[in-house]
Length: 438
Image (cartoon, helix red, strand yellow):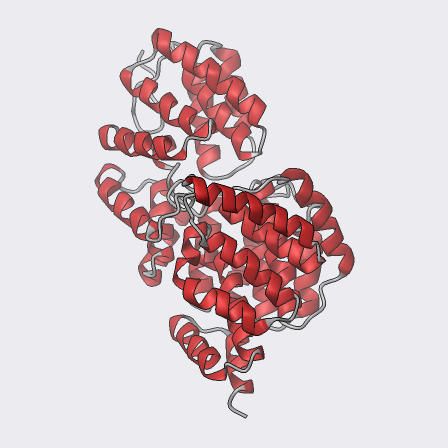
């Protein structure tokens, strides 16, 4: 009997158990649910020669920043697929291998060629999509449009697939078509509620619609079924913290952070831990609420261990927030020096905007609001190049807005506030706007 994956594509294993465990592991990965690694280990145990199971396991190691294990697993997959894999499986493993070995340009080219040939290979189609996908971290200023274009090109191959509807909805939401994105996301979420990407994408859509209370209720009702071991548990708690902060419920926001977001309590990916914690604590300080010093200290200790070196734009920006807030100018300058070398060599996709943000947040922390605004204003449209979601990048826009207001550039600040409020309702922005009209 021919074994197939979730999309009906053939698998080079004669073990029904291995194929079943593989399909389960892939679905768990695509839904950011717990148990994916265990399911893939079971697939490998049932058929140690199953190349795609080793490749998927390599991906799980990458997600949790275990590069040595990831490379060993992808090496094994490459050796096996060369011996017995199909053309599709060899292409599948090649795409993952390029990504895992840190060749983003080649990996993206391979992924796009692969999905054009085999559009039903959701595991590979997933790689460019989402806030941390290859498009987002490509340095492209139009990566949200690229996500929409790719998903729409693939749509005829998926029908009512819960995973595809989730990411199609996400793509439209991030690209500004929020009502359509929400509707698609809700369709996918209804098909599989045990889908952390689904509730996450829906929370983003609600955030963009200014429906914070609705998002809060959604998360409260859904999160208990997920548990703290879930890949996105801490990040979804971060969304609740931001909802509370925007509503002016500062004590609740800090409590939510302490209970679900900070390094000591979350089991999320290191990139999420650093970016979520840094942006939340920075917002507290920037909005005029003093972030507790022990929380900054805890984050500094954690972040310098997991991301000691520069060269990853999204991370570099958040490490700059940490260094600036902590007054660690030496760490900030070291990271900027690394960025300067990468930019000069032409090997830094995001370009100079990352360095500019690092300089700007340092100026903001030192109270040089005019200098901060002067740096950020010309680069405002390029912030998208660092990757992540709109909600994650908004911390930089907040910093620019507050720098304008505090440096006396009231007309510019008011214009930016008006623009933001036209895009989405915001109780926080409305409060700030009210202070300018009295």
